Length: 271
Image (cartoon, rainbow, N blue to C red; front, side, top):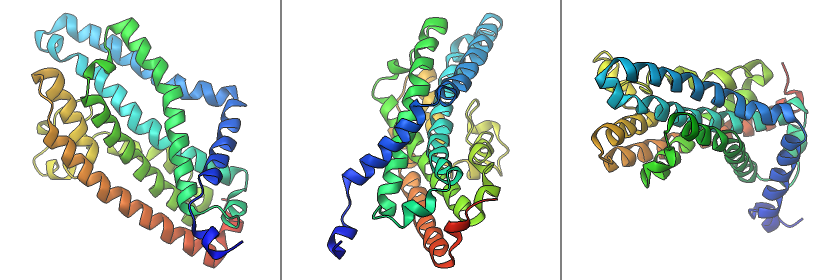
C-alpha cells in the first residue's frame, strides 16, 4: 500500500468499523435494553417529582418542567459519553485493539467511528424516552425549537471530549481504569448545575462551574423555560470551551496511543 493511501482518510474503513459495532449492538438485546432502561428510570423518577412539587408550590409549578428538561439533557451528555467509551471498551474486552492499530485504520477514522456509534446508541436510548416524557408528563423537548440543536451539539461535543479522555486513560492504565467510563461524568453533576442555578453554589466554586461547557447549556435551558429567552451568548461560550476541551482530549489521546505503540502495551491491554 502506498504512503499516500495510508494517510488518506477512508470513509469505507470508518463505515466498516461502524458496521462492526452495529452488528455487535443489535446481536445483544441486553445491550439495547440497557440503552433505554436507565433513561426511562430517570424520566419516570423526575417526572413524578415534578408532579409532586407542582402540587405544593407555585414556584415549582412554574419551574417544574426544568427538572425533566434538565434530566433529558443530562442523559444526552452521559449517554453520549458512555456510548463512545463502551465502543472503545468492547475492543479491549475482545482484545482486538492491537489488531485495529496495526491495520490500515487511521486513528482519526477510529475516533470518527466511535463518535458515530455514540450518536446511534444515543438515538436508540433517548428517542423512546423523549416520547414517554410527552405521553406521561406533557413535556416535549422537541418544542424547544432551534435551542435544542444548540443544546444537543454542545452536550455531545462535551461527551466526546470526555470519551476521548477516558479512552486515553484506558490506553495508559488498561482495564483497571474501566470504571472511569461509568463514573467520570458523574463527577461533573454537582458542578455543572443540572438541576439548580449556578448562583446556588458557593462563590468560590462558581468560577470552576463556569469553566465547564455543560453549565452554559443548563443555564440556557432554565433561561429558555423560565424567562422565555434563548441565550445565544451562553451557547457560544459553551462552544468555545468545547472546542478547547475536545482539541486537548484529541491531542492527549493521540499522544497516549503513540506512547502505547512505542512501548508495546497495546498487546497487553488488560487488567
